[in-house]
Length: 175
Length: 287
Image (cartoon, rainbow over all chains, first blue to last red):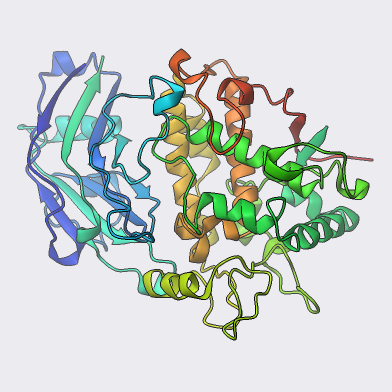
């Protein structure tokens, strides 16, 4: 695995559901030519609130909910978080005190991981990153995330940066 | 052997659709752990929520879930997930329909008409919605939620159930052409070369369909009360089955095989072969 990661915390509420992250990624053409797949990896994504959608754009600081999902706009992909609509238990019910770091349970005794534990989300962005590296001399400099609530009623959907909570975002490239 | 057919195929056969609706109406009238309400509650409310999401158990857990749900629909489920002789032989071989939301037809019409149309009389169309809560006067109807829980759901998730008495599930679908496309399945999902990659990518598309339907389907605690949930997950299970039998298909990691898919008395290894679970998928059937 080759790559670069950013420790810039995500989840800072922003107007219009937009979160901008200074995520830098560059690679010499000879090295990039060996890459078969590149992923945006979102660690510890929260899902206890209502459902929401995240759209990712590369090197487009003007991206917002109205931006068309085109290569020209730096669109890299999207994912949906299927949410729980907040806690329905008593105090402490949804406090997952630790996240599960292993990829899968090691025994049947540990398979009941806390349902509120944050998830890892992976967005494959190979083509979008390829376009960035060809188009920009300094490669990727900004990741813009546009977050929209997926409320039960379409009329209630809104820009909702506050719904997206994530501990770390990285790019992982595989040769 | 239950043959799971596409909804589109069932819609061309009025007798098959009538049998399915009568099976659902009966299923929804069962007030114990052999009934629809109990199965819907396992995925969400009332607590505890048992479903596995964001986990390598996503696909196996939902396969076990559908397996026992189908047994119950077939009137072959006893107490505590035991199998019995069918109580009503007419429904004993019924298969859970799968909704091909990636098809051209779905991209034209959206939700299947058989699950969307409002029918007069009695429960109307049992595939369209579900009564989820007790009446406000304290008379328990077919719904499983207490008045307190119903009020909490209305407060935290406006739009998943009606404000009527008794409350029923709602939908608010997006435009049909926003559904996931077959080309996405072919290029991104079905060519995954590891189990974990396939499980993860298919779960993401699965979430897209949940929020596309909107209403109860769009949130984990209420999703399984919408009857379309079960046909959506039959589609997900079918895609897993097709991938398993493709050149890319792989088993889950060995460490996962003996994991119990709680609350069901079944392990990951025991759900890998659908032949052993006594069902199969077909596009259509001709008698």
